[in-house]
Structures are given as C-alpha cells and as structure tokens.
Length: 106
Image (cartoon, rainbow, N blue to C red; front, side):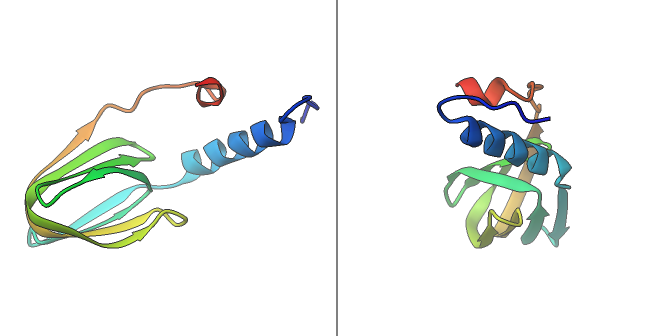
C-alpha cells in the first residue's frame, strides 16, 4: 500500500523499490587460477587500486587484495564485475542489518 507523502513522496517510493531490488539480487564469486574473479550482486565499488578493491555487495562488504589488480568489467545495473590480477586474499565484512527506512534518513 502506498501512502501519499507531501514533498518528495515519489522519491521515497523509488528508494524503497530500489532497496527491494537490491535485496532480491543474488551474489556469486567465481575465481579462476587466482588470476580472474567474476562477481555478481555488486552494488558499488567503494575504492580501487592496484593492490585492493573494496566493494559493497548485496551480501555485505568485500575486499579483494593482490597485485596488479584491474577492473575489466563493471555494470552496476546488473551487478556484474570482473577483476584481473594476482589475487592474494578475499575477505567478506559483516553485512549491517538495517531497516527498510534506515537508508532514507541519512
């Protein structure tokens, strides 16, 4: 049920719908020979260098460390990302639990 809200109500509805879509997205990670990583469910690349890629996925944070890392494919509409280079570690960070409205009032 949609309740009309004065002053930006449509924007709030769109943000709620985006959050629902992100929650329905699936996350996968496939690594080939510690040289190529293909990911799905990527929401955002927070930072990138030749030694580390920090991501926000639908399942929480993800840090990829290595040498000569490059991003070869990034599509935030579909959530796909390809990273090439010499991978030394992959670390997930805890997903913060948040309510549906918590991101609206930051």
